[in-house]
Length: 266
Ligand SMILES: [Zn+2]
Image 1 (tube, rainbow, N blue to C red):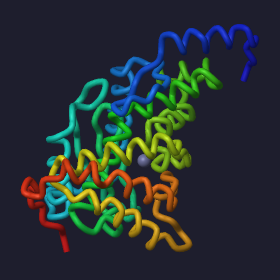
Image 2 (image 1 turned 180 degrees about the vertical axis):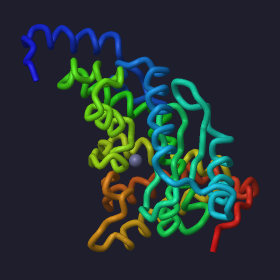
Image 3 (image 1 turned 45 degrees about the horizontal axis):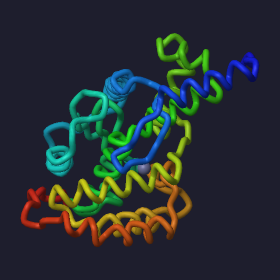
């Protein structure tokens, strides 16, 4: 890559800091250089590609169950940041994984049900992934990359000219595991997605205490080959401790009577 003169870079970063900042739903200040609707469109394009390339479960008990849980959560969260609508797709794949993209695509792999064993635990994963979208974490990652490194090539890849770079874009959007690029979110992003996730699941009538059980399941089935979801989500005792600290607040939002009664698949 060509090195730009330091002065130009500094001016660029300064302009970015002035023009391209935003606040997340929890009030964090972060870089958001790209227009939200542009990032949403990129996410939607990536999701369409994903659906063309991976077998989809439709009309069976598993996909009805996952859709039931996911829809009860999307019913209580705002529309996706940047536009679009929530679109839940179940992929037939054994990997323990799920993701949500800017623009509203939510992908759940059938293998996830090995770790998310109850509707509440599945709600915890989906709530967490939606949290990443609503806090514009993909935009922040792209913006940081743009401001620090990839400048010109990133602009080219936004136009879809370079297949290698469009894999990178997908990784930044949150599909790292899908395109084979391990790109975990930062700890701060993870904590924020956890916080938003337990709020969403509780509002939808799912027991937020089950978010902790979910993490414990993930760690348990880890073994020699950790679940894909864990490999892009730093796991720690600290994280479970943070979730515990958030429980009193989340339990205030939790109204068990609103639970929609999605029956898990046995
Ligand atoms: Zn996450």
